[in-house]
Image (cartoon, rainbow, N blue to C red):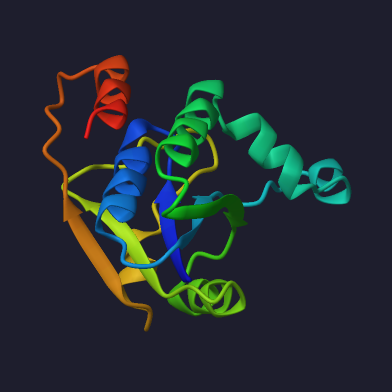
Length: 157
């Protein structure tokens, strides 16, 4: 089994990367979607810190449904999908996260910007300077294509 990490902003681009991973995988995959966000400066937020609450607030219903679609469409390739919150903003912190999760490779979309909101940040520069193998996937997505059309691409082979 291979562990693949996909940095996510919870748009359809990471779901298309998941589809690419499933179609090109020789072994079963354990998929980790990594959500990168800075920690809050609020003492209350730090006292009641919960990665599950952060993820619950960040993951849209459409993204969860897209993951369920992919699990059902490729059960022989995808053994599980889980989410990790990443707060470190350097390559060493990413390397530690990748080592702890036994990540074999990272998939990132080439020429697709992250859609950032609030405390989120783009972890790609940290990923590229780490020792983890990275596969950059060329995504042929027009900026004018809406999210519903991209979800339709998940359902087609």
